[in-house]
Image (cartoon, rainbow, N blue to C red):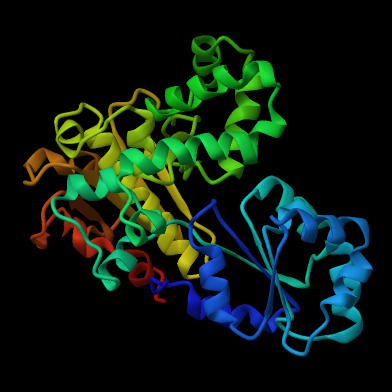
Length: 394
């Protein structure tokens, strides 16, 4: 059982009548919930008998499993109508932290929660292992390319799975169990190709029309599929930052994957050596760091506040802008093991426009040495594990 950074915030959220822990399949939600609330009664709605009872007679289901400590309702998306009864029970009996929910389908769980449990539920997100969690659990791998190739799903580490064994099965089960019910069966093969095309666009502006054309589906269908992948915690988008510097800016978001091991599998990169020599390496390194920043926000119980900046011509760009409170922190990401003088080109241009202080600028690269330069702070990739908590004062 691995230690997880979210456990402290998860226990603190037990002041709410209902706590919902969301995240992708096999990110460790069930293990973490049972560790955080060991006295709660555990019920998995993934089990057909349990699910049938909850769906057919929600009130009887809750009364049958009544106990003094509380209930964990695992894979809650299979019985979303229970939220109406959770609301009634919570309002009637006023027991903080009594109901603990987990869910791996954002589109089902969020709809049910926001319609019935507004003001009564604390929502947190658990993603695969972060860099800090890998460090704390002594799972950090060398070289960096092996870490990117392996990804962060706990089961890969706990059960010594080879990435080339784990991820193809994960992709198949995700399509069949979580997403397949929302897609026309005749389109499943096209959808698999669509996911692979998304992987090939990591770190690039998301062009829905191009994805649709290459997959052979309509633009509305491609847009719907992107939403399904996002809701299933497979991909996320980095939106452009729009602070007005009297410049025309790009308007499309960039596409990233939450897990680089999964992305490598989709790209048919089957060895660490193949990754290191791949033209995707720089994009995957960037994806790995940005997804880790996203995890750091979630593990602090914060909504990720991450953007990128690029002018309309594409000549000037900053990989990430952290926009927190009243401050902006530009971050440049370089996969190389040395820092060239032109590595600061985007940061320098942005700082001049924003009239920003160099001490709030960062460049993270594929080596370990920290450097303090006039253009900003240089961090090795290992030292980025607590950057978000530092910037947010948490």
